[in-house]
Length: 102
Image (cartoon, rainbow, N blue to C red):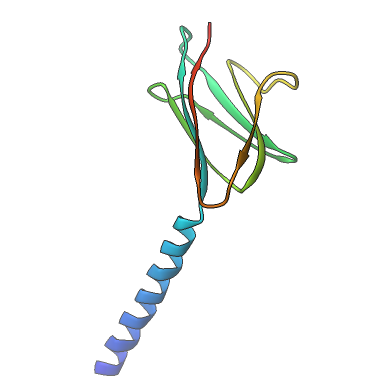
């Protein structure tokens, strides 16, 4: 019985360690949006990878892989000509600041 408990504690410790390491290496893009419109979407595109999220309480957040991302803010869909290219470093959070829409 004691060996089983010790093994269980060891396995749980290893799993917690793996999750903590993965969380430290997560990369994120965050920011705020000020807009007179109600439903505003934020899009992030990196090659064939694309993400979208609705602005919630004026803020947005993406978990992304490191690399160059094109971030676009709009009402309906991502536009090819609009947006800002940003470089996300592994394990860091890129804060885009406040984006003001008219």
